[in-house]
Image (spheres, rainbow, N blue to C red):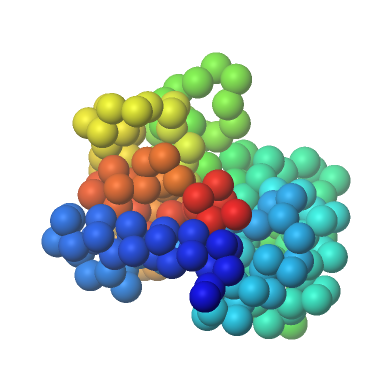
Length: 224
């Protein structure tokens, strides 16, 4: 009998597959990022044994302890970034989802070690225009993207957003649709960039996100 953790993990995988089928998408086109912040490393180990490779963390110190135990996994930093934390993030993660200003991108670029592959980054978009939320506005993304894309040691891959939580399915879809349209604009603007990633959708709205083109869903609550 699988553990409760594995049962929940498999249930989330089934939800993703079902949402992809409903959206006429290939199930393998959506990657599951298991958000393991505040969870014990034993849980990470158990999921890794099931084949889960990508894990998301919000807190640098906690993440570094887990990375030391599982350096073979793909680690994604998804939390707010303070300027004094860019160095350990640049040195230890494969992906950063929460680049919310030019200065942070510049610091990550300068501090990414030469011996590592370029750091995959996503620009965080404040798609619901919330006054107290981090992230670029849609117009700022269009203004900044060329400069950020040219920074060395970084690989701009796309966009990330956390819209206002809604329970109505159609209301959930609206900001995700705007994100898809914004990524399409960037792809036309920067045809030589590998802009292939939309990180959006969490436990409560993953179906709407997948319907609107999410390529990566960040799931914590429903797994852990």
